[in-house]
Length: 45
Image (cartoon, one colour):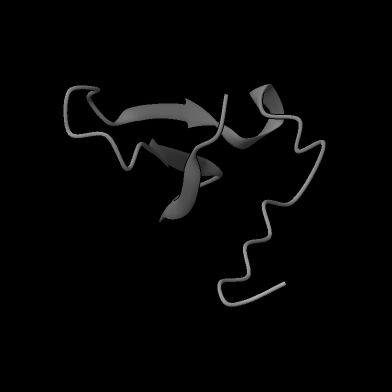
């Protein structure tokens, strides 16, 4: 699952989806494990 992460203070994070069909979820920072980074490059290969 790919989400954008935003700090909302007091050790809490907001998990945001680019797809507006999914709501923002707020969680404690210790509940989240970041395992990668999404990278995108456009143009001719």
